Amino acid sequence: VTGTWMDSTTVPCTYVPTEGFTQQTLSWSVERDSSSSTIFRRDDSGDHILLSKFRGRVSVPKHSPGDASLLIENLEMPDSGHYTCQVIWRSTDNSLITEEVTTVVKVGEVNPPSSSWELPSSPRQP
Image (cartoon, rainbow, N blue to C red; front, side, top):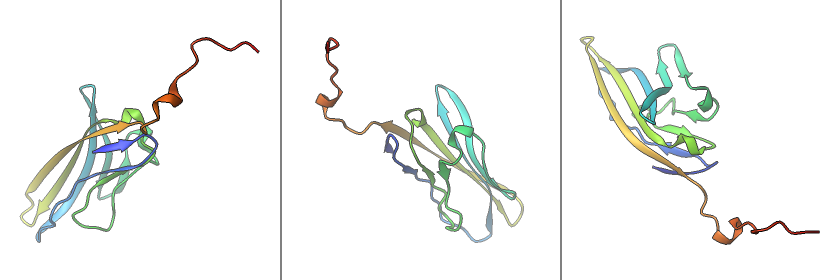
């Protein structure tokens, strides 16, 4: 998934809801520079945004079963990384099933016209 700086992007995570299985927890984590951090967690007590830099910028659809995609708004360059969606279901016999999907997110700048970024080589005298 490619996003543009200061824009928003959706990191996809969808599944087919199955009868007899209830979603227990949903979590999103991001891996950058070989360290992984959990961004978002949804469980019985509600939605929790665990990384402060994502507060107010991420959301997951609430009322669409099967859609656990992560919307990231106001993208920042450091948001690039490997995003993992993990969903855990509980079946009727109380066993747990876990599924994970990882998506690479790259944040790029708006393609600027090259001339607008050239600075004069020497300061102009008044």
